[in-house]
Length: 230
Image (cartoon, rainbow, N blue to C red; front, side, top):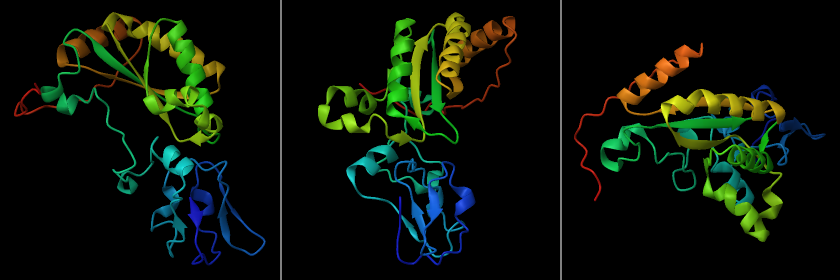
């Protein structure tokens, strides 16, 4: 993000940046520390800046970081931002991506107030693979190691990134245990969601209850109007 010349120096924006990336200059103008900024888009909300002084950077690094999530959905630019999961239950009638006898666990990583880096994502992904979970991580993140020209992005901060793992309901307690241990070691936070068809979600709930874990189900009912892609 960057600040244009319309800034009046009112300082109304300062409390809202979740990364503390906004500061005031000696000229009493707001400025953005691009090393701290995760391109979350909060500062471009008109309710935060009365003169719309914040703008999106158009350089490639900012665009790349922006694609890893926005806090406010109304600021999503669908040309640059891809948030949809291949396991979306709302479209499963058409895609049939979620197997009938398995669930898909999504581990969404972040480091509130400190910024998640691509290096964090890759280290946790490697440790998850060592545990045998083989998480599906964004291909854009994986390509940083493969493309030397993108190596400078490893320590860039992003808002969030998620892993998805396809597994049997009975394996859920094991991956929760391993993921919790790994994020604790890396001083990260993780939000865990499980997606699946009703029958497998019931199995998952029973497994978790047996382990003393309460799961909060959220149902999404498909109308059955979709036709499977051939």
